Amino acid sequence: MFRRLKAQVGSGFYFGLNTHMLVCLHNCAKQERVMTKAPVSERALIQRLNRKIKEDDLVLKKCSPYAKAYDNLGDYYVVDIHRGVIVERRLDSTDLQSLGRAKKVLADWETIFVNSSSIW
Image (tube, rainbow, N blue to C red):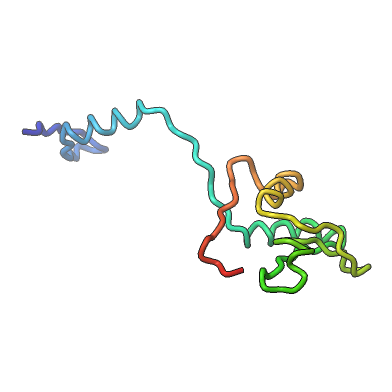
């Protein structure tokens, strides 16, 4: 069914390649490659952002949906650690992604991955 081909490698060693494998390799090389974005977890993005905004004495925090202040703060908020004030509030995952791109901690080929099993 499949014809075996012999290829010479190095100093006379032969190994067998079957035709099916060569056709598959050829077809895979011809197909257009689709660029997919690498997933980055919310937690990893928060850590990257916190390392970056630490220079400005800011910290990005996540609010628990069970907290009393959740309606006022939203999912994420930014605190100035020296003054003790909330600088930004009501940030969601899309805001995190745009903030990550603005601060250059999230590359163009990366996208945020939202873990739906998390309770927070």
